[in-house]
Length: 175
Image (cartoon, rainbow, N blue to C red; front, side, top):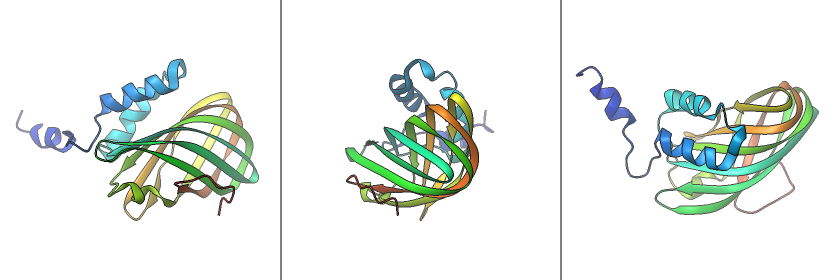
């Protein structure tokens, strides 16, 4: 029992963080019946990064033919600062072909304030599915991690590098 106390303390949520159960419940309500693997993906994120202090629920569309674009919109949820609209867009480049529409949950870690989510978050992404899929990527900017968990429809195959630019209002400019 003494060996598990530090781990339990490390995973205990403070008043600004979300537990795995809170995230899974929000995801099941948002993703619906397509969320069979959601608990496993959320568990992997929690094992790797700990407890988030925010999450975003939204939808996005993307397409690629070597270079790609992604556009999305959603709501940022925090325990301390409430709900806020968030829009994202971004380019990608790589061996990547196809298009997809997704429902997206983004876990947000180390968010100092709502304004901390606005900016460019870079990372590497990969997709391989026909008809439907579920996946997770990790994006980072100045110590803030955003972990998009996506489930969607379409046909996509590839690996790319790119970024998502988070903004408080919609824009067509992905750069």
